[in-house]
Amino acid sequence: MTLIQLLEAGCWSFGASACCAVYFNAEKKDIVFGAVLGSIGWVVFAAFKAGGGAEAFGYFAGAFAAAGAAEFLAVVMRRPATVYLVPGIIPLVPGGGIFYMMRAAVRGEFPEALSAGYGALAAAVAMALGIAIASSTARIITLAVKGKFRNGKRAAKHTVYFPEDVDNQGHPG
Amino acid sequence: MNQISSDDIQQIAVDAGALVLENGGETYRSEDTVVHTAQSLGADAPSSFVTPTVVMVSFRDNGGTHYSYFRRIYRRGTNLRKLVMINNLSRSLERRCRISDARMIEHRIERINNTPDYPGAVVVAAAALNSFFFTLLFGGSLTDALCAFGIGAVLRLILKLLDKSTLNSFFISLLSGSVISMLADCIGLTALPVHTSVVMIGVLMQVVPGLALVNSIRDIIAGDFMAGTARLMDVLMTALGLSVGSAAGILFTGVVKGLL
Image: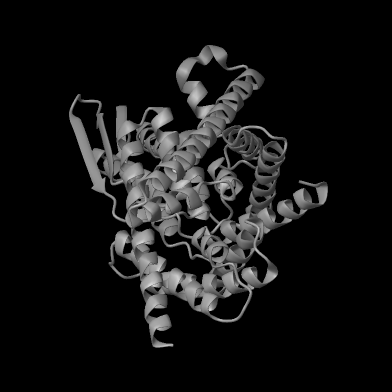
């Protein structure tokens, strides 16, 4: 895969993620960030895949990159990380795999169904692991920065799930 | 406990958790929202249990009486804007602890619930463009992408029209699978140089449960086994609906070819 192809793929995944964010009803200023994450995730995945690594590792790396960036943005923009994570991993999700699995199963082609299903499951597990590791890392870093190790579990939960206190415009309080 | 009654705490906590769940939040986020909301309204030792179809809360009041309340959830979608708003509400309740007025909070939840989406035309255009880009991403040519653009718009239009109906999600997947495959195969019958399977998967990315599959594994990793397995079943049923539906396309092309 050449650099040009990689850039091209980055553009397509940017567009796909941006459109996704629109029909998932994200706010206007969140759409661009979601799209950038989508393109980062896909480019990392494609680069790993082109480098000859295992496909599952590509999924892991892509999801890790997108989720790490989403956690960072969540703190900076004072939003829940999900808002950036959902459009960010959309190009990578193994939707095609699970569809092919079911289609092969319905047609009675069981070896194909098993192989497609295994691929989809491996991709999903790799991505979920990447996301879990990224968000745990973000939690540790947040705690370290805020120096709240001593306040125990409750303080930890607050810093992670509700990164900053904000009020939406137009809402009292 | 302050002026907020235990009934109001139950109502508000479950409403907030249900909003997170119905708009695409993770299971742990929904549970956390319920617990934090109940706690900041004055409940003692609240705990919650959330699966994709139910939100439950239970807690003690100052007198040691136990309360518990649940809500059945029927529809789940993804609405990132509402997710941000409910997160803000939960966070601001937590900050201001015991000076809240129950009616005002209920009013705010109501308002979040009624936040308008993007207009239908914008959503349809976005979905069409989404199919266009996915087709290019999966290696389709420009002709393929343009076909996907058209089919994606039709699909989203149908989904939009069915949005208010009470059809269950399996039937909706069945319908979208058959619409996509029939349209894609129709284009395949013409003289256009189109790769039908690439077009189909490009459009299908709108409806395939890939995100739900990843979320189900995330739930299982996080230890929410009930929610994870329930979501996994949801994924399998949606994929089954889509693929059975896509058999309609094969039948349809068979009939058309027989007639020609």
